[in-house]
Length: 147
Image (cartoon, rainbow, N blue to C red; front, side, top):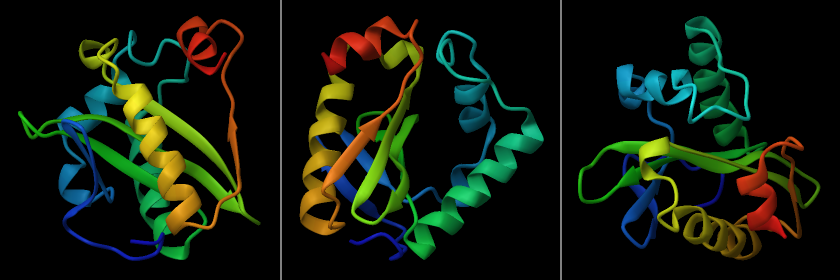
């Protein structure tokens, strides 16, 4: 499925994970808690509830117009939303990758699996040729992954 095509089913399976369009049915307390958790968001700004709602709507709108490819990360065994990932921006064959995984699911190899799947999907389905990743200088786990 290309960006812009909405489905209420899994877009991509990645090991024990599924990547889904950010459906509003998942705009619940668990999703907000992902963003409100200080440990999970240690290297990012924690949005207010109104910012969170705006950001979710903006993500859906950008997916539909093809300017981004944000996805919810669902753990197959539990059916729980454990993170978000995908491409924050898509423009002229270039995209910015981002990922947030709940602290309790970190260090299980999910970043590596999602990264590989997103790179492949970008090249084969979204016509993306350049991937950017930005992180803060103190985000040692992400910097180590990228090295």
